Image (cartoon, rainbow, N blue to C red):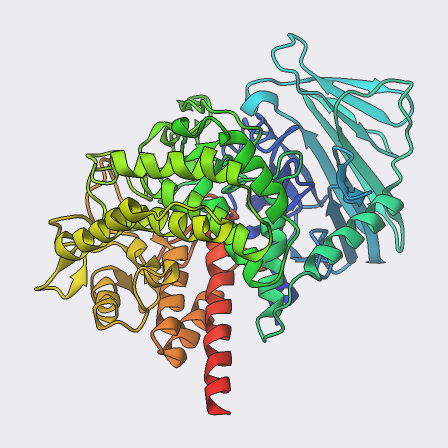
Length: 623
């Protein structure tokens, strides 16, 4: 039972001016963009109008310059706060209480389906309700457009509206606020005070786009809230897992749905940029793009719980992007198919907790990562086998060209799954996925009815596997290693049994698990990706998805009890609403990296379902 939301946290005015722990945030969104809402009632991150647009609130990355939309008690004393979702939805509830009363804030972005099409009104609704007694609040709307570089001009529009636009037209971003009470305009901020009385209700609506006297002041919050709840509950109902961790699994699935850009079906890795992998460190990256690897793994997770909502749209998007252009296959793409995602630094922002640089764009778009071949073909094979028949045209124009790329490149070094910025290496993980590419191409061809005998493909597939066993296996360590000739290991090799490269109970894989734990495991539960040099200064936290991969491997290896215990331990490091970040500090338990992270939530779902699947197998055998 996800019951962390019942815990009240004590806050005061001083805390409002400091960087919150990453764990103190929840997320709302409309499948076009999203916002991070702190437990203190402040929206500290939102990009408009898309996930990858410049931010309009970014105090997450600079408390002074970034801007926010805050609602908090209007007095100096302490107060208590708690935060939770309204059942199986992405509608967020935040509550404050003190000796005078209790207040509730309902935050959501309207998102619902009309005739099967996902509709967004490009709005953020904040409903304030006085639940008990009396409560004085201060509301501050402080947009800072274009990543905090533009202070907007604020104008009163009509009786209830305020517009926020750039005077110099440096950005196309415009915002508008509809409010039943007056705001004072102070230096680029709109500040209002409201005395809430028992059962009183106030709706604030932030619109992405301009507002004129001719725009309707009707917000239709009641109807939009009802439709939005209905929409999310319908998606949650797709989950067919009924085990004891259902609340956590449903929450993870809803997070993953939030990270889908509905106009195209693209799945982003995370909604944030530059949240650090270590406080004060430089490993700060922009994850607001769609990696083929991450997205395909997310589809695995959705399939494992019976969720069918996203797979068709994503597959259509993926095949359309690369159809007849597969020779230019790249590992990541913008959410509308953008190819060039050049990386640059925003020097005017200090970064989360002064962790700089703040980066937008991601130079990994132009890296050679060999796993993309196998992941793409595995996705096509998976789709054909489980829910969608693929055509001979897809085979001829995507599968065959990818196999040709494998033939040309499989024996070359690459940057690997972790996108190292040092020297290229012959990563075992990358070679394994080249084997997967050929294996799935052969199987897919047979399923489609292609008449080739695939003899050359079969020979190369076997050659790659033999090479991995010869050069990627260290006899003295009794382990698969990180790269050919290395004495170090890599947590990514834990995926070997999940892609059917080796049986999970094979002695060679069991001993590989042991060596990975010996070299990379900390405190019995936190697994680092690797400990090798990667071309960047400093270090990082433990990667949560790696720990979930370990859970899956232990389950597949027949070590059910240990697998379940590890999973139970890891769940404790989700935050108060069940969200996971990319990494974790093994010493303090603090969440690190971009948040919430699709890769981690996918890994969690897969781990739960692998344990569940192995339990069902044992029960069938027992009968």
